Amino acid sequence: MRVEPIAFRYLFALTLFASALPFALQAQTQSDRPQARSDRAVTVAAKTLFGAAEIGSKHAAESFGGYAKGCLAGGAALPETGPTWQAMRLSRNRNWGQPITIDYLQDLSSKVSQNTSWSGLYIGDISQPRGGPMLSGHASHQIGLDADIWLRPKTDRILTRPEREEISSISMRRASGAYTNDRWTKDHETVLKLAASDPRVARIFIFPGAKVAMCKSARGDRSWLRKIRPWYGHHYHFHVRLRCPEGQENCIAQAPPPLGDGCKEAVGLVNRILTPPHRTRMLSRANLSRRSPWPNCPNNAARFYQTSEGPLYGNHLQYILWARIRARQN
Ligand SMILES: [Zn+2]
Image (tube, rainbow, N blue to C red):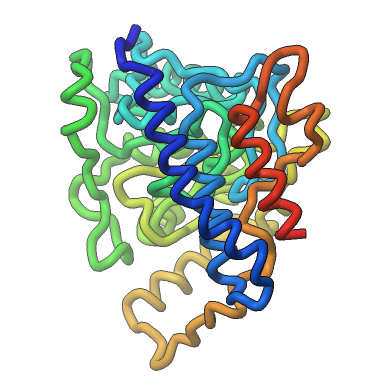
């Protein structure tokens, strides 16, 4: 049990929220202001609101919106320490997810302890208690279906809370991610194979050099490689993304990965790392997105403010701000 003064944290969150208010109101009254300013205000407001949640809501578990723009009802916490896992960076309070995600992580860590030299897994960020955007870090991890798993092999020792803040994972990459380094082992491949072979998984992100290494060494059934998607970063941890759970119609799924093992595509990416194209066309900010930065959560007050189970997001003041900002955005 943590003894953190909740009231203090709440007050802090409210202060942050209030500091976003002038931006929001200004944006509301002066519609000729650059859209960027109002977007920024909405982004800060959303991050602050969701970042202030201490615990999951008392609803049935449900994901709303997409992995990078949504929120989570009925979030469950991954216990900080289990027989085959330890949650890391506890101060972030991001060890929350859909119950299916928590089950998956526990199952996977158990399989890893049985099939590799690792004693299980160190689990990084999952989601905030009610999902949504975060003040620092990820664009995704917003609906309780994404989880970061460290590439540092777990040992038997139970780490203290301070250790879980200080200890870092280990990078597995060489040459900017074109290759794995000498820390990468066959056990890493086994962990990735176990992780990807679970039918609950939609895709897994890891740096291109790791995908190519596994493409070269995988024997037998190679179908799991399809779900391993090469992505920038992801050399200290890999990122597991689960499918939308059955029957959750408000959860926006991603198109499945293209057919095949994706190995040729990964080699292409590695080649781009080794020989970057002359000019990379930069996406101009204007092209990036004209959509509202507010997460895709229903704006239905009955459901999202005060339900019989209690408020899902924030308090009355926050709801009013939220509604005003939304009105401005729509
Ligand atoms: Zn991630």
